[in-house]
Image (cartoon, rainbow, N blue to C red; front, side, top):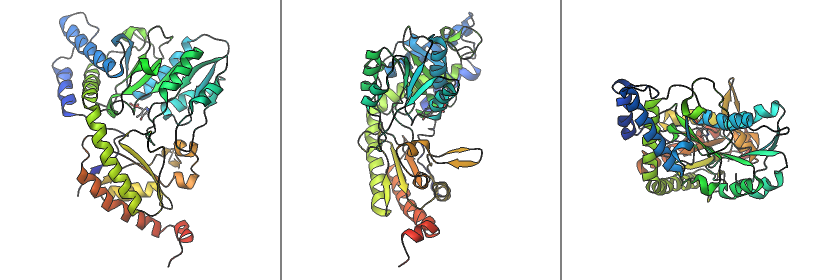
Length: 391
Ligand SMILES: *Cc1c(COP(=O)(O)O)cnc(C)c1O
């Protein structure tokens, strides 16, 4: 059976060039980057090359890059590490309601500890209005958290405008750029961010390694305790092979950005238009212009999303719902709820995300399979037969 992977926003395959760059650092060059002998120096050199490469993807200085165990840890380090370092009587945070759970749940945890949080309103198109950020500012505001590209909708937030507002108000700004890296250009100085999170496995690197950009002289306490690694910001023996991997992945992302995003935009539009023209009542969520080019998020009213994912998987097409599964209960996506979708529609929604290995044949195969799967699920849905009485 043909297998068509359309879930690149969940994770990507490791690029063969990334894999071969990493391989020597498992068994041959296995030194500890903190050792002073030559094996250690070899590992240290590889780590610093990786750091320079990640820095150059986002216009940062190498010393501003802190390696972590992934995007989740990078987000947590920014939020908790900054709050711990910034000594102030009253603290207020402004955050977007469509953040990834790595930011959302970190900010919610602080809210439970008594820190004031303003959750920004969001348009039905899935874009934050910078004026709402300005209106939410208070004298005690210390941090703004707004992601760059949303993982479910693909919508791109007005980060440059929000960065200027933050800088004018002397408020720190964290941006989760895990989904925008490699898809749209990132420049930490133009965006005026103080923290920016990246993850290797979303850009054809290995799972379990990420990076946090921390602007020079920005307050940050470590959230783990141990050695003095990463300039006292993140202890633990460096994941040398992983860091080499994220470095190579960043280098390839930079070189391939324009070509990848143009090609994927064409394929995504073909998929989207094909779905809209063959599936009655299908609707695209999120601003279709201000969006990363590999992602489409579609509601298929009266077709239950989780069942649809399984039905499509049986036909070889792999995609996802935006929904988070916790303790066996499928919750409707907080992103779709935030942009105003009712629960039943949020649960009838799929995300298709394309990537480097996606071909036109893949898209055409998916376009054969999707309308039939939706049709079958709708034919057994009581709500559909009520909404569309049998002829
Ligand atoms: C995947 C993802 C993360 C988490 O990154 P991990 O490396 O998987 O921990 C954070 N933010 C966004 C937007 C993501 O898509």
